[in-house]
Amino acid sequence: MKHPIVVGLQYGDEGKGKITDTLAGEADWVLRFNGGNNAGHTLWLNGKKVVTHSVPSGVMYDRAKNYIGSGCVVDPVALKKELGEIEEAGRKIDSERLKIDHRAHLIFPIHRDLDAAREKTPLGIGTTKRGIGPTYATKADRLGLRAAELFCEDAPLKLKTLCEIYNPFLRAAGLPESSIEDNLKVLSDAQGWMKPYVCMDVTPFYEVAQKQKCVMEGAQAVMLDLDHGRYPFVTSSNTLAAFASIG
Image 1 (cartoon, helix red, strand yellow):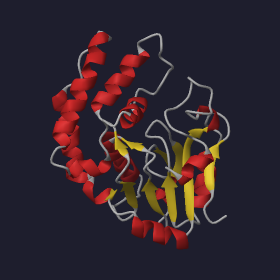
Image 2 (cartoon, one colour):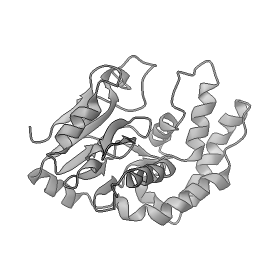
Image 3 (cartoon, helix red, strand yellow):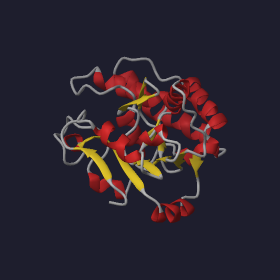
Image 4 (cartoon, helix red, strand yellow):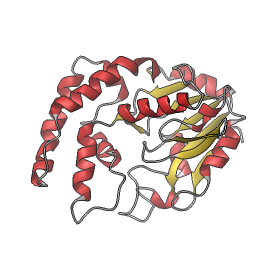
């Protein structure tokens, strides 16, 4: 297969990392098409254990370039930390080897706070509390911020408005509001380092991908699919192989 898709067929932890790692060694691109840093693949680099969460598994190979697709959600704080850990293991990932689709939505403290608040209610399902679900929720509500919006003048205003809309949910749960200042600090920091990684024009990328070998890397597994899994005990994105063509 020119563009194999790797997904888990149960609930996760089936060994996708091993398969993705094997295929990535022969790939030109490794593309992550769903989920956020609530997932992960355990890999080994120079005898050191490396756990990727948002970064695709192609980071282990000099040949492969890596792409975080539009179906993903990205936590700027967690991604920066992850890139630092990978560099400490001996593999520096610059903006030539990692691209983020400009349509991928961003995770902010407000999303993590909302996630933690829901877990304190009878409706909690045991999430990772990393803000994945609320980020997909604000995406569907057309209130989220995409990677491209990091560089828009009204990004701070939009993020402030997002906090003002959702902070009443935290108050209703008897929890402190999400600090607007903390959210804006994450935004400001991301504006300072993420720009080279954000892929604004995907047309040339698709033209290249048609001629090269790509591995589509899924997160979680099919029984956790938002639509076809064991709802409500599922993740917040579509995990089926079919979603690779969208995400």
